[in-house]
Each structure stands twice: as C-alpha cells, then as structure tokens.
Image (spheres, rainbow, N blue to C red):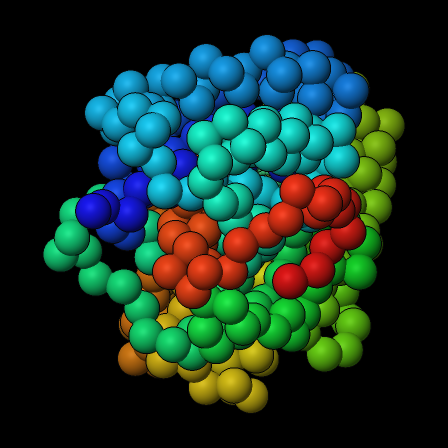
Length: 338
Ligand code: KG4
C-alpha cells in the first residue's frame, strides 16, 4: 500500500494542491490570483473569494495529474496558518469536508514550517535532502525569519521582522517607482542593468537576529521625493539604479543577520525559501557565502520559492508517518508562529 498525501495551500493569494506518494512529489498545481494586481497588494476579501472559485478545479487537476483517485488518498494535509483567515478558511474547510467524505485523516501544516521543510520536496526518489539540524532563511511577502530546523516537528525561530517583511520592502518601493504588484521580480530584472552603489539607503541597527525594513522604505521614499523635486523625470531616468541599489541594500540586510546567526549556531546546511528567495541577488549571496564557509546551500528551484502545496504535502507526509493527525475542531490561525 502506498502512502498518498494530498496537500492544500491557501494561506495568501495562491490556491495550490499537490500530491506526494511515498514521500515523492507527483504534481504541484498552482492557481495564482491576478485580481490583486490593480490594488498594489493582496485584498483579503478578494483572495478568499478567488480561493473559493479555484479550490475544486485545482484539487481535481492535481489528482488528475498525479493519476490517483480520491479513494486512493491516505491523508489530507492543509495549511492551518499563519496567513489570511478568510483564505485559510477555504482550504481548511475543504480539507475537513474531504476528510469526512473519504473517511481519511487530516494533517495540519504550519505554513512557515512547510517553507522550512521545502528542501525535502523530492521529485525523484534519489533526490538528496539536507541533514538536521539546518538553518533556513525564510523571506516572502509576509515573512522574514531565520529558523533552526532541528527535526521536521521541532523548529526554533531565532529571528523575525519587527515591521515589514523583505517582500513588502520590494513591493512598497516598487509601488513608489510605478511598478506593478508584486514588484519583486520586476526590481530583480531592472537591477541587472543598474549600479548597486548609485544610492545609499539606510540600514537598520537592531539587536539579535531580527530584521527591520521600515527605515529602508522611508529612506527610499525620501530619495525619490527629493529626486523628483529637482527632476520630474527622476524615476524614469534612474529606474535601473534605484532598483539595483534597493536590491543590494535588501540583500545586505538579509545577509548581515544570516552571517551573525551562522557565527552563533554554526549550521552545516542552510536553506532559503519564500518568494524573495527567487531573487537573483539573494540566491547568489547565499550561494557565495555558503561556498566560502563550506556550508551546504539548499537553493530551491524557482517554482518552489513562492507559496505552493508541494511543501505542504511534503511537511504533511512527515506528520502522517508520525500519525500526528488534526481534528475537525481546529480553526485556522493568522499569527506568525512556528
Ligand atoms: O512567498 P510568496 O509567494 O507569498 C507571500 O508571502 O505573499 O512571496 C511573494 C513575495 C512578493 O513580495 C514578491 O515581490 C516577492 O515575493 N518576489 C521577489 C521575487 N519574486 C517574488 N522579490 C524579489 N525578487 C524576486 N525575483
């Protein structure tokens, strides 16, 4: 008998379903929501409505691609939190309904833990996986954390953002530059043609392994405001330099705390995850640093950087093996915790 786990992710603005068979990924289907583009950020009510529309077709497509029928499922893993409550409710209610209908157990998955366990997504049985304990830099539109993964079920968050997340810094500065939402990938592309030293944006001086991006955001805003006073075409003429300097500063902020954490915890493996781990500057900086320090770097393929159910099904598979099941009484939660 094979262990077949269906994973469901609906914490923010991506509806995703994936199937893992005996720990190996069979498929990962994602429906991204375009409705938010005009608003410069995710609109929670629109996100939950879109999840409601997407969830049945996305799960059906995942089962079709995996070549499994509902009756062959062993368990359903779903994201319980953190995230937007309305969005989480769609995935969790769907998982509960399916679990009752099929009479199979449910496994609740913490979204941050799923990101941290992403290096265990295996597309082939022979794919390598990291050794415990390892360190994860989790950077997305909602998160900026440094996590120590001791075991699949035991993690410690040693640093987190005290204000904005790294992705928000990209997105909000991108909005000031007139770029579409989400701006991260656009800034990444523009940065390749600009001078990373053209502008000097402020960096935080806060203790421990915590992050802060609000000072950078303010200094970016002031630079653009002052620049436009002198030249109304400032943004257009300096777009690439602004993007390159912004990206270099964000990468610097992320790497400073990661290096500090490595000095203290001495991990032998480091993984990165979350939408911002798609950034070329972040990927190169982590890879170079790890090579220098003789640390094994786990840089995910781009398709597993943003929110996806492959990581939920993978994290859920670990819990399924431990018979760590969730009850129908469990409600979603919004707050960042691991
Ligand atoms: O993990 P994710 O899909 O979900 C949320 O947390 O919402 O991350 C989305 C974030 C956005 O802020 C987006 O601008 C950022 O990831 N992002 C990037 C890149 N690709 C996506 N940031 C920088 N460079 C990129 N290439």
